[in-house]
Image 1 (cartoon, rainbow, N blue to C red):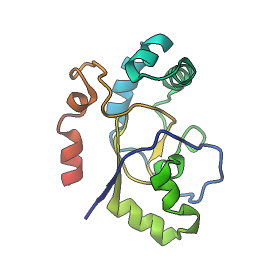
Image 2: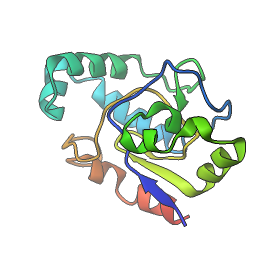
Image 3: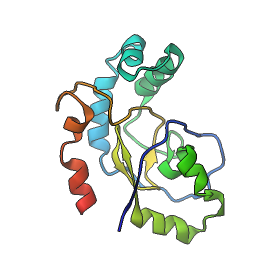
Image 4: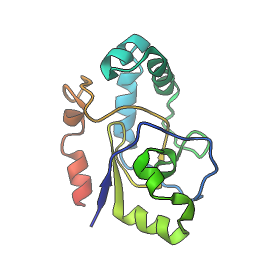
Length: 157
């Protein structure tokens, strides 16, 4: 059985890491393809696309511009430790043991507009890109078309 989570809009890249284990995102080349297209957007384009404030658009424009294809502990953090929304706060990760993180790595997946599917310990860089965003791209008119069956196939494996 897999537990599927949505990502959170709120992120924390400053607090101490609760686990030193980290894995690489499995669909990183697809993410890099999306980033190449997102880098072409202006701050105004991002604000309109995501229906967000100018301040948030500027932040995400900067994130897209500085995105690196090599995931390191300096530019990334494990997904489960980066998201800080209600669901992630409710998991009281500070109380987890190494075995808890290992179990989550096997049984939990986080759906993502930018990364497709993340395991809890997959490294990710800060971003905002909701799956429902109607971002026209090389694979279609939105992110559902971009990811197509890739996410379903990976979850079925």
